[in-house]
Image 1 (cartoon, helix red, strand yellow):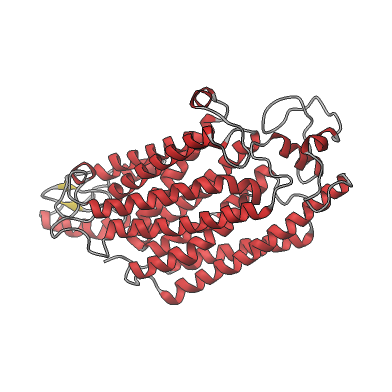
Image 2: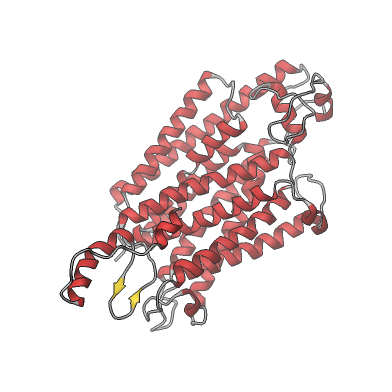
Length: 452
């Protein structure tokens, strides 16, 4: 719906105009609200977000999209679908979203010397900035691929908290200086501080919830000793009562009775069903993957910033900067290529003891494919909206979308029963973490400036 609103033509005034100049003056007072620029001699130009309000709207939509697609990917892994299959589907529609944005928003109106449209810019000598955009796509793709495995080990909410906080601390600081300090530092860096506090609380939530789960499993079996000296998972599965007759809410197979979320039965059934097995493995594996992903995420936004604004003056004289839509296209192409290479490799040489697969098995695997394709669209449009907002209000402020753990935590609690039947201490820490994230996103948005 919001794409239809953006593409709809702006209304004409319902009063007579004495001249083209008079029309241009009236329209100039309206256009900043909606993002269009009108030239009476050349017609409608390319759609760009120009106002602070439009930038914030883009960031809020991006926040929802970027917080939702990880939940879909997690759901598929918990159903038992191989992450290699899921990510290959995801990366196809992720690229498709960039192509749609480039051929619609990037092609509206005639090409202008200072702001060429998408197809015109493809043939220009702008390769230094293109390489920055493609480098950003590479690190984002590697980061997203890494988090797909971290979600299984660390959990959706905590993984998103840690990666987002690293992104804000490193990426936002870099963007602040790349953007010539257009954001209000007195507001921006307290927002960064709020993210750091939320990280500490998120780590405490993970520690407390892990202790809660250990207590549940210890009560279920005396053989469960602090997550290390447990029996083989097949033995734990055999210890479960033989329940039949009800449908599994995730797989849709009517062979087991639904275990209540937050119970030991639920945790063991989940381990038996999911694709990435985590029982008996060190949590440090997941944390290492998470921190690696966070560093990758912290670099893609500054790289995109350099691609669109050329702060290092790498372009030849007279060559226009990459418009956000062209940069996003190159960004997504490199994201697609690196994802294709890595995931095809992981089909035949899987990591973390996952079963081997093949391209033939991937093509035949339609279980959950629609959800994976939807996740790619959400991520693609979410990134595009983030960059559109960042071009107008500054990429440091656009990093407010890194508060996406707010959305991911909501889906984690609603869909997956995370923190269900946990201790009071866990709930207090969880509430504190969410409060600090709400404060952080508000402060970062308040710091947004306006690019001249």
